Image 1 (cartoon, helix red, strand yellow):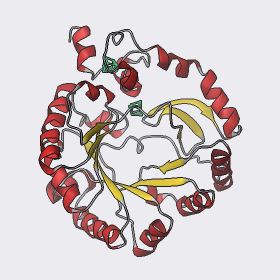
Image 2: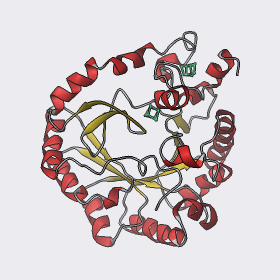
Image 3: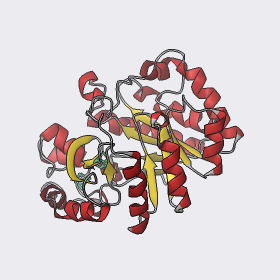
Image 4: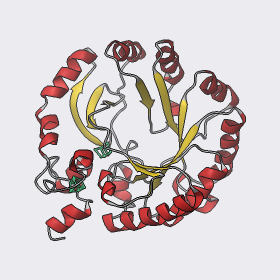
Amino acid sequence: MNCPHCYVHARNWEKKISKERGLKLIEELKELNFTQIDFTGGETLLIPELFDYIAKAKKLDLNVSINTNLLLLDYEKAKFIKENDIYVYVSVDGSNKEIYEKMRGKGTFDILLKKLELLNKLDISYSIIFSISTFNYIDLPNMVDFAKKNLAKELCVIPVIPSGEAKKTHIYLDSSRILESIKELSIKAVEEYYKVNIWCAPFLKLLDLPKNVFVDKCHAFDYIDLAPTGDILICDVIDIPIAEIRTKSLREAINDILKNPLYKELKERTNYCYDCKVLNFCEGGCYARSWIINGDLRKPDPYCPKVLTAMGK
Ligand code: SF4
Ligand code: SF4
């Protein structure tokens, strides 16, 4: 769909690992006690091997979720999703036709509504993901109504990271706009008593948010991010490989991650954070943003208001 916030479209990921390697990798994940596989895009429903991978993962009793814009969903795929108990994250970046189609193009909003109906008809559990940008931040409170009306389990909000297309289109928000938007969203979430999850902005734990608005930690130390090329990335929004599974087993690759100097550096990000009350939770925040904006993974999140004050900004 050529979305202006996509961090994948601009990447050079043409040369993918084989399906055999992908299937073997799923076995290795199980052997190493991983419990969850989350398939992301680009657009997940464009991955030709997706349903073979999912079938394998489910056979091994792994939990599976997919991220999709739903536009390619049909009844057969939806039935497979239901029968295999797959959790769905649906990217919806506007609560109305005008805003949504600014991101995904003409004619897409009505298709989305039909596909959401299909999920509900088959009683498939799903969350909505809203990537917050200059295009749509005004719409954020309306998304609570949209998610509630369409029976989504929760609304997940992620600030667009200045990576990939967004780096060119400049549609990412600055820190103060994110803070303001989240405060407005929280008021609405309380009014509607609706669950909201905020991703990739752990510094928001500094705010006094209501109990139905959750701030997620950076998932870096709990997940591995695998590119289609077989590279394990330090985070999926930036091109820094820290290991690979093309020539190595997953066990060997994980040993390589733990020895990687960059991975170790992530633990030394406390210069501006040492007296922070949420340091144990936030751990210096989003290091991908530190890399993109400051060119240094060790620096704390450049969007954190406490860091900005400490730096005199
Ligand atoms: S480094 Fe940033 S973008 Fe990556 S998972 Fe952590 S918070 Fe999210
Ligand atoms: S000061 Fe550091 S640990 Fe505290 S919220 Fe900001 S980035 Fe996170």
